[in-house]
Length: 302
Image (cartoon, rainbow, N blue to C red):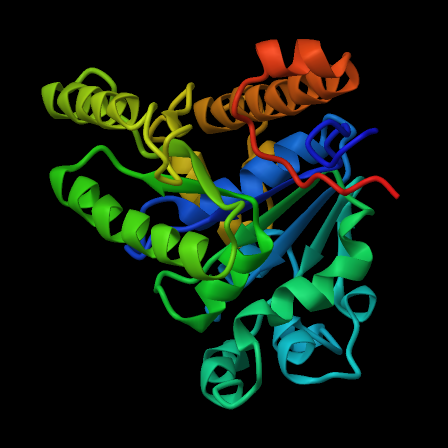
């Protein structure tokens, strides 16, 4: 009998989170989603940050939207299909707006409020191979909703000492959500942004991260499969300029270092997903022997 574990994975649902702002979180969410969509994969980008920077980055002005993710969360009559907008071939976005900041207060008395996003997005999830959620730079209800829906967490960060300290708090939050709401949740990737690989500090921070996650391999913590993803995203002014034009860096300056890095990172994310599909489609005994810990959204067979 085929089980959910044996079935080929349907999608990767990845929340990008860091409670510290200005670390490349939104830049990574947008450009990684765009780079994967450019490879012909079906992608949805969910902007869950009240600043709506991801929406603006892909050319969507929240003021022109009949509905946003705020309406999706607070209005029972609004469906995900009412909110999503196609911004490029294979790429849809569910935009945010500033009113989203009030959602946490408005939802305070709603039963099972930490799973609203999960319930609302379930009808459209099967339309995509990759879903990326740009979380707000906080650890409140919106972020918990993202973590309840996601199967994976990517942590964009800079190779700075203080940023490294912040990762510990973030991992605590993921552990709490994993224990109480979503036992399938795992931190699977660290994305180094604005990276200066030749500095001594950056080398030391990367070595510390590698050692930290390697030490977790044989434990049951939800970051036991996490790795520092390569390539790192190099510091590049074009990544900072692109949002002001409502473009991804792939549209704005397709051959700059930032665009090249996000393409390479996208290739790795796709390659890992396809490898998992191939293993899951192999005989069950072979899957047990060879499977690597890439987390995806499996659907039980009926």
